[in-house]
Amino acid sequence: MRTEIDGVALTVFAVFFAIVTVMGFVAARWRKPKTLAHIDEWGLGGRQFGTWITWFLVGGDFYTAYTVIAVPALVYAVGAYGFFALPYTIIVYPFVFAVMPVLWRRAKDFGYVTAADVVHGQYKSRMLELAVAITGVLATMPYIALQLVGMAAVIKALGLTGELPLAIAFIILALYTYSSGLRAPALIAFVKDIMIYIVVIAAVALIPSRLGGYAHVFAAADAAFQARGSGGILLDGNQYVAYATLALGSALAAFMYPHTLTGIFASKSANTIRKNAALLPAYTLLLGLLALLGYMGHAANLHLSSPNDVVPALFQTLFPSWFAGFAFAAIAIGALVPAAVMSIGAANLFTRNFWKAYVDPSISDAGEAQVAKVASLVVKVGALLVIVFLPTQFALDLQLLGGVWILQTLPALVFGLFSGWFRAPALLAGWLIGFLGGTWLVWINGLKPLQAISLGGAPFTVYIGLLALLANVLVAVVVNLFVGSRQPVQA
Image (cartoon, rainbow, N blue to C red):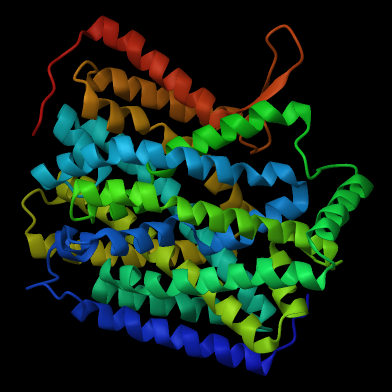
């Protein structure tokens, strides 16, 4: 991949980045409320986002810059196994359709801002609330850092060196998020998603024609995997269970993250969420097309220092400079939207479930909004420091752990929406076993989220997050049988 400065690409990149920066600050006046000094307005956009805004916002923070870089990189590195993201994004939307409107109604009726708010209202347990809040913040921090990894890949491709360009981009992000709250990423998401669609459609339409067609692309990828002795364009028999459990576990975890839940809570109605569950699979089609870029990297005979360079290298090699700059801008902007929503989600958790719960229970609405603004800045700075001073692999490992961790909040958050049988001590015990057990299994497997299991026959591999969730639920059921059931508390 070329690393010298391309003036045309850099100019196009800078123009689009400047446009979204202006949009970020203007967003404070978009659908302007009486005041932004309220966490409902700053952190949830006034809970007034309709179908299209929610579609772009949830799509924007679900399909991130790191997704654009990492999914093709994984397919480039391991082949068919990297396509697990497709079934997982298919599975997740029926779950969203069935569960999220109920969760939205609970949050709307009682003024809840976070998942931990919902859990506390349901079970009146500060310990269970704290467990959900801590898990949400821990799982979100490395996710924000990985958006920087995606942005760093395109900054490197533009020929810019050092950490200053990355720092400047995130300082801009921090300032307009502080000023405009959730309205900034919601407005920018329109531009980001349209740009990403243009980039991906152009890539899958034009790149194969320059590489001899899709038949040659698949043949070249298959030859590359055979020469390497690992990976392939089809799954091996011993990968089926791992592939299926990773897809299922990822689907169940996806809408437990604070940033995806923030998009849900910001919707104006339960019907808005149902419509989005029907419309969002369009992004799955986009993701499938995007993943094919990994195979195209083999057909293009790219010389890469890292699989993460495959997408920038393809655009540098096969497109004119102006379009490469446009593509890099789309990816970089694709980091800004989810990073902003993630930092807002983490800040809402800190404000409501740490600061208000333990430091200042009588805090005013304006005070809540101010604490959330400052917390969002701290979260972004923390993510930037992780990327600047620690190896990228550290953020990758933590993000893999984060998926296992956030999945353990599902019983506490979801079960109470449909049943009053579980009590807080049982769910807390289940969370603790799932959290610690999942962490231990990931650790002993070399920070890989897969565990080999043998039931008397040939061993097979299972996603650890799903194993931890199973242990979580079993422990919660057993403990609940001893502590007794209860009637639900709706307050």
